Length: 237
Image (spheres, rainbow, N blue to C red):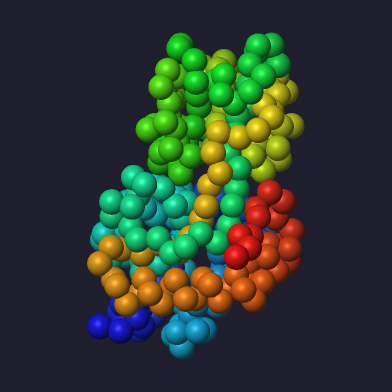
């Protein structure tokens, strides 16, 4: 089977679009999708010579859960080892730092200190950084929430000692966290790439070449600049 048949088996490229990460996807006032992920999906559909259908999800975990169901053909997700059990990823196209907000009264001065016995960290369930923390934390525990807004609420209600998130989102949300302060540094750097179901060898090879072309042409960097997304960095190779 060739790459086009593997990527668009119905003749239409069905893209799973995650509204939970506004650095990539958001809606305008008219309800239309826009963002870096939209630009990338449109570019891929054009290269394949097929039309594009965008399927909207509220959270990345919902997108990942549908990977084996044949609902979508491709998505953009954080590259993460737990997801790699059911998902094949292209090379990374972007980098984002993930970090913590802690109470102003906290003695913590670095991200490493947060992984301490008895510490509770609020994080959205099945977000890429939550999946990472699940396997990486040795002492602290996670208070899992339905989304980032719920994590902020849990933190503000003093039900968690730290708030985990993508640093650009944390910075943009500090006005909602009057008793919090952003810790310097990060606990991980997240790469995002195209995601497809496992077992599509021709599609994998196609996407690897496509991503290389996108990076070499500066397409990803130009899209980030066009949408004025702060904190999302295009990988340069």
